[in-house]
Length: 428
Image 1 (cartoon, rainbow, N blue to C red):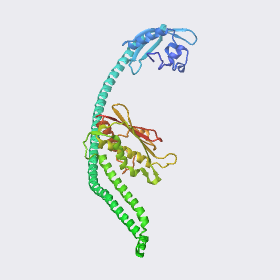
Image 2 (image 1 turned 60 degrees about the vertical axis):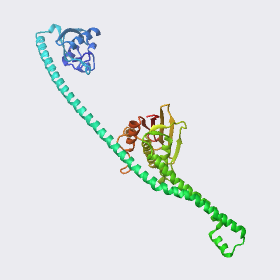
Image 3 (image 1 turned 90 degrees about the vertical axis):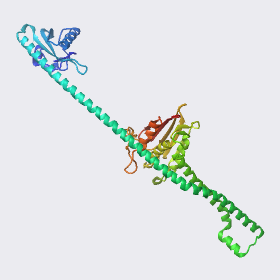
Image 4 (image 1 turned 135 degrees about the vertical axis):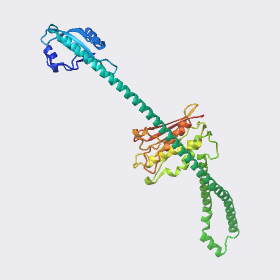
């Protein structure tokens, strides 16, 4: 048995005897190693055997071990035609030409019957394989259709959840803005007048002290009891602290309003830096890692030439919130902060006249390769139960890529932190 390249695939003892060799001497050999015909002649003969539907009769001269030549009658029949997937299989029968007899005709008939049987089986197998292929194709089409339906359902679910979250957030912010902003404005307004009134009273006390340098004993005791000098010095500090606190509350309220953009159109030109700063204001309380007694360092590298872009500001602020929150979570989970301080770096830059880029990076433990490919899948999370829903990055991807025609990518090497790169067109 040989293939169309002349490799010996199987031999019997009779062939070995004709060559004066052992069967194992023929293993992994080629037919050209044992015949006197030229490679071209042998190649043409095997090619004829591979392509002919009938027995191919020829002559091959064997080179025996003792150096003598044995002229043989060769009968070649293809039992497996050549195909791109596999070479042709050829059955060769070699017979001493002088000893050829009538068995040759009988053998031809048997080989021909065998060839027809093999061809019949191959036809049946081909028909069966085709039927299986059609069935697999149908199953694959149905499976793909079901997967697409599932993805659409998951996308619809995440969009509904996002809409509900943003609606709830808007209601909360509206309530906070209404309930806090008015009294804070009242406090700030009255602090100014209170400070003026107190200053006038202290001036009056100063005038009394000027004209009554030696007040009665009871007045002196009262001055000593209330520690008038300290009171005068500390009162202005108290008023200043109260003013700073009230202004900080007002700033937080304004950040909340800016974060949700309740009073603005859905799509408008905005300064991206304002949205980032508002998000950072709302997350400022989380920059202190309590169990480590450390503060997360915040580095902002803003491009001063960054133009305003057309976008849905409330949605982009939601993306900033999701990614920065994940960075804080990653740094809070670190157990060893000795070598390097926990840091979040936010950078913006103008790529060209049409695109800008925002990167948010942390120096945490990074993300494994197997998880990076699933980061934006709905409901995928590495956080423990109750801490993460697996929707933050999925929603962020939909906002950036689907709604703003942008790009959102994650770059991470385990042990070296993670960086999220957001690219947005300047105009939608």
